[in-house]
Image (cartoon, rainbow, N blue to C red; front, side, top):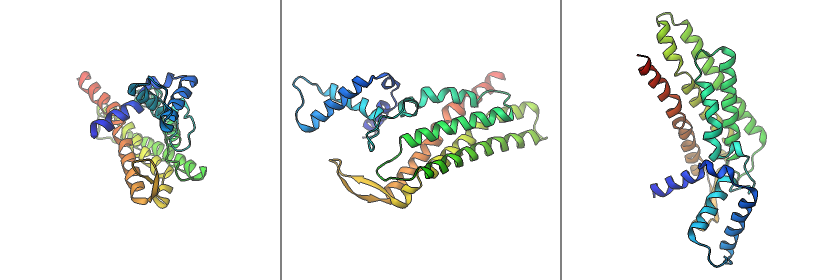
Length: 241
């Protein structure tokens, strides 16, 4: 079961789906609709059906049926997010550059969260805007605050200050990511989300399922930046020695 879910999410984040044409996407949607209606053309293989499902899931929102913009798809999270992470980890950051890169990172995260939100229940856009403002504010405040504290820590040597500063982006990004998810999707906690049976039919609304969904999503927002925001500073520290 775990392996199946793992392979499913590998398909969802596969960056090759970013280059699928609109014509190819419509062919996949038409093929899947034919399968559901029992009018599948002869000769279509299971591999072709799975490929069509992969492309559809990576590009089209499951609740709204709308096409997700390329930079905000889960398959675009790594290729479009990597330049931002590089900016966050640049050495000798100024106050202005720290604010800019934290703002850009949270703007991208907010758009990804909004584009891939659970849309089974409608929510006013103002709620998502509040989440965006909260995430940007928390990220910038933590990053700038930590940098100021480090600069004022007279007990640290210049080398130690430089080393500690390299780890500042991670707590700022992790805490802001949690804030981003919770604020943008907190209506799910009060209203619940739709629960489906094996056939995809809505059988009810659950606040417990919403709580689990938000908790797991928030945890992923902490774990996902770790390899690229914690390992490089550690590696550089070792190499410099």
